[in-house]
Image (cartoon, rainbow, N blue to C red; front, side, top):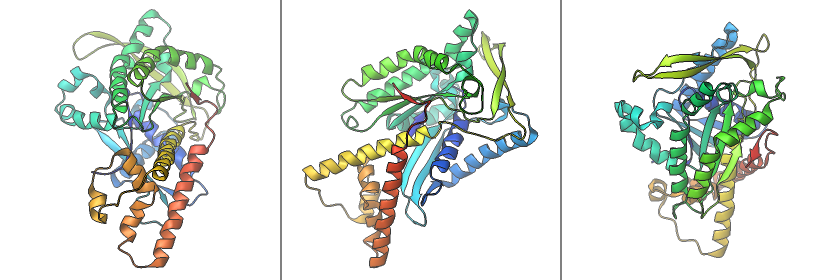
Length: 384
């Protein structure tokens, strides 16, 4: 088992989950600029992110933007991301963020796909163990629906029923006695918001209407989460994100299609163009996700330190046994932020210089986490 702080995305197909992950990592790197902390990616994660960035670079070089050409998830994938002191050989603070095809949220669709049936239990386990539930929302689907038929289609296109069911399951798990004292945050993240704001190169004046629609359409889900978590606190964050920052929605096209069962459905396709030539990607508010994850870890560290002051610590197992056992959230906080991850290795080293340097790096890493957590939120972002 890889010990990490978990987050999960819950949203339908084509909403932009994979592109959102790339934007989150890009803005996290920007937040870390000028520090001695590195953003490190697992090998498979690095390959996936590199492919996503290459797809976007091709679109920029071609000077033609087609959001549908940027590949989405075809299978379950866990992005392994870490924050690490520069030059340190140890893993630092690891996070794992779950991505998977949005169609898997629908039980009927899962039943048709052997890979989904096989992997879904792992997806559910990751989701229920996550500190954060991230709900991406395609802003244009909400904002460009004007006729009764289009507004009816929104519920299916954004998967309200399936998303709400999974949010309920997540909140119920967070309310379990084993997790009740852990941090929990629900992030509602409208994506591709460039047309509706005027703070990132656009001329939109519809931020208030987008906020109102998200409140209205996701009110039921928020109420379900609050009902399932009466015995604890779940923070709800509204974070409208520009995943590109250099495009404008020119037209929203509603298309009549036939689904796999032969039933008619109304689909949405956005037609975008770059604002300027050459285009320059200007992600906005995506760093909120990493900020909130860091706040979860820091709040856990603070609580753990209070507990350590009130009660005696038991002796840790031997280094190798301790590293291998299941620890849960509080164990992870202890393991990474108390310095045990380093001590676990350093007890086998006899260099006083090495021990001193390891402690310095641990303090750097904890300080960086606190700086990220304390960074003022983007003005777009609200806590509900």
